[in-house]
Image (cartoon, rainbow, N blue to C red; front, side):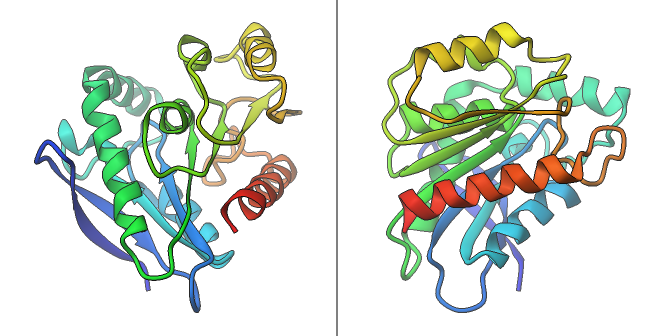
Amino acid sequence: MPQMLALKAHDGHTLDAYLAQPQGAPKAGVVVLQEIFGINSHVRSVADVYAQHGYLALAPALFDRARKGVEYAYDATGMQEGYAIARSLPLDGTLADVQAAIDYLHQQPGIHKVGVVGFCWGGKLAWLSNTRLRGVSATASYYPGGIQEVITEKSQCPAIFHFGAQDTHIPQSVIDTVEYEYPGFPVYKYEAGHAFNRDVDPKVYKKDMAALALQRTLAHFQEHLS
C-alpha cells in the first residue's frame, strides 16, 4: 500500500515523501521528481505506475523547504506560485533532499540500484542527480526546463531525455545542445508540447506519446537497474 513517510537530509531538514510499493520483491528503486506543482495526485500516480512495474518508487516533497503540503492547480496562479517557490529554493538544499530519497531506497531490503526520473523542473534535477549525487545508476528527464544551463556537467551514469517537438517552453536549440553534448544518450522528440505526460491535464496530455515515453523509460531502467 502507498504511504507517506519522512526523510531527513544531511543538513537536518525533514521532508515528506510518497512511497509506492510493488507487489512482491522490488527489482530496483526509482525516485520520482516533481514538477512545480508539488506532490499532487499526478505525481503520486506516476510513482504508482513505477510500482506497478516492479519498482519501489519514492517521490520526495521538494517544496517542503519552503512550504509544507504544496499542491498547486494547473493554472496561471499555480504556475506563478510554483515557479516562485522553485526559484527561492537553494539548489544545494534541493539536491540534498533528492539524495535523502536515493539513500532511503538504498537502505531498503533487496534494493541494489536506484534510478531517478523527473518532469520539467524535476527533469533538470534528475540530470543533476546524474552528475552530482551518489548512488544513481540511471536517469530519465522529461522536458527538463533549464537543462542547457547544466548539460555540460559530466555524467556519472546512463541518461535518457524526452522532449515535446511543439514545446513552447523549451526551444529546439536546447534539444540540439543536449544531443551535441551527449550524442551517446537517447534524446527523443514527440509530437506533443510541454508536459505531455501529465494525464490529469487535458490541455497538454498526449496519451500515445506518454505511453511511448514510458515504454522507453522502463526499457532504459530495465537495462541499467536490473
